[in-house]
Length: 203
Image (cartoon, rainbow, N blue to C red):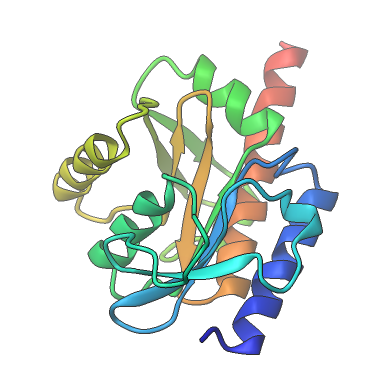
């Protein structure tokens, strides 16, 4: 059973991100942690701007469906990987935008550095714009468990893993303690990536 407020939060975030062009067609997926072993996640194949009650299902922390007759995206396993790794994570958002697609494809290294932006304050530990963050860019892979293994290795090597990453040519993932926090981080990340893309055009 999914609490009404959880389903409403997921439906509302889908509408907001659709208005901003961050989840075109059936792209993206969202989740909220229900408890230590389960999460509510969007079902596969739905346009996120037109989600309705019933377009959210429950899976366990390993991605196994607990709602009969419904299927979530294979990328649900990436949500599960975040929840397993970061106990403080309460919500995960995955979006697709022009900016994150273009910038992740153009990135020559394994990260994109964002520096000097006011919206860096949306990320933990960055109280002012006088900071920078390296957002990891990982290779796209249709083998989702293998991708998650790579992410776990990446996080193992980081002193402070940022609550977000990009999949090259594919999309962005962010997480936070709750849905409002995750939404703020996704919007901040997407804004900064759009600024970076615009600056490249002006050079």
